[in-house]
Length: 310
Image 1 (tube, rainbow, N blue to C red):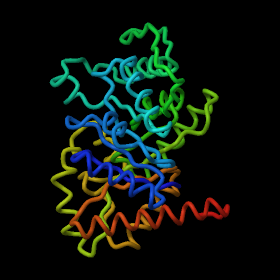
Image 2 (image 1 turned 45 degrees about the vertical axis):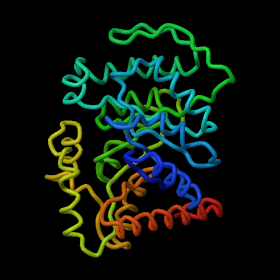
Image 3 (image 1 turned 30 degrees about the vertical axis):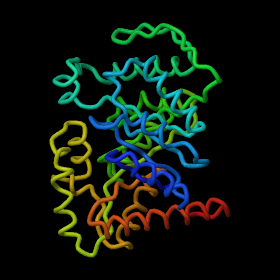
């Protein structure tokens, strides 16, 4: 399993420091959210140059307000700027955002995502001819220089989304998904769908809030106001219920370094291919968490180089 960092975008200079620091420390990937602040793909194109190894992913770009040809154009440009290291994570967002904010219908999101991915995959080749029930994309892009096509991943949680992701994308980027759900639902469903479509084994990227601390009660209480937003969102509520959690803050990985390391290990055992930690806590706790991620990344890379199990 590889290790990464999952982060919101607040100050662009801080993201540049994060990317360069992660590469220097042997961390495999950095995953950036797309909310109502800075545009993630623009930031990645601006500060992701000058790196040689680090994969940089969006987690995730909402598809409803972005036509697939427009997103393909932006993603191809960004990927060219950073030397082909972009992972384009996309997702449907939530009805509480799509309908009141963008004035669009959230009816049958799995159908929308299936059509969107079909059109997006075509547009990423710079030639698309697709007409569906709800998505139409017909035309050619003219980006010079033979831009590399980014890896496409989806924030697939439920069975229908996992199935279509296995058929049409390279993997899933999860949030609020625990080890039990990963082992019982996520990995077997997406893998079976990929096998049926003749695609390679899909990636399963887990993102989770993590805090290395000697005061877990205080740390978890501090995380609660941030993660509480996810308590009643249907797609996340279903994931919490599968783990037996009443509150989203129970999904956070909180404890001393040994406890956190052991809990992260449960995700690897469940089939995750990448674990990306969102750092929480005091500055000292965030630094300790960041150091642990670096240690895990170094150990994983060393084990991979020697062929040892880890």
